[in-house]
Image (cartoon, rainbow, N blue to C red; front, side):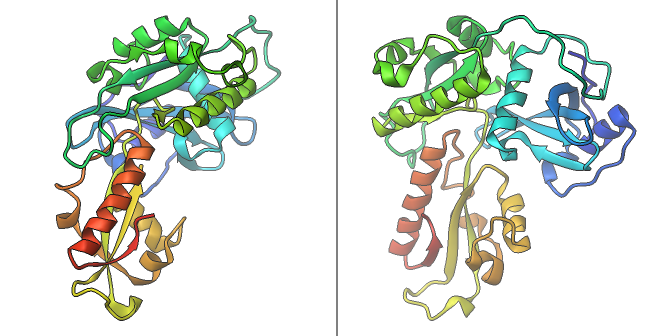
Length: 322
């Protein structure tokens, strides 16, 4: 797999790779950390495949994570892979897992060449998370669940040693194999040892995830590589009469930066009506130091709810905080 060097922002990396100029609003796109990973085997628009770019960042615990975007050169669209539809995101992740060949650049999609039979298996591991007073249920195992065409133990070892794109979290928080949990699942949940089709593997992985969550495990499907932040936004008093003495605020959680998510609210993209109509600005004093960033959405939702309750107890009027 051929990639460009770092030291350039995303728009420079796209221009260098494709000769096309792009624009976008996310602050992370402007960081001089981006590199082109290669041309995926997933078709985007106009029979061109998605171009994949990555950049390494650090959260506020100084733990690394990798931000991955897919670029549709014809549509002029940059999309974090977490925001693609689930099937497309799975196919790009599978391409990232197996890539090792050199890609010359943007290619036109044609009839797929015959490929060697490939099978995919589930792997499951447990990780420790950073200590924080507000971390919910610290005794509950945090599990990473994934699939690969490698032996499960080999895959976990490659993640732990940084040999897989986007494995920065596992390098700092090594994955302990929990294949025993997989083996002890009911056969109706565990399914076959392997699958030849990604769509079947995806469905099986979702079933295992949902079962583990029902058993009160905390489960992530992104190698711990998505950072969730709980944030607070000040609202105007046009929301309505105050019930408590302090101002109105909105509490939410996001896998983007709080600034990016606030901008989306104001533009009406997946927006809360409270922030779209009454949002003023982020209230960093209420979340930037007191609230941890986490790698599991279940933790983020629990912290969001707890922070909303805490703020109400302190006399704030609160919207959101599902």
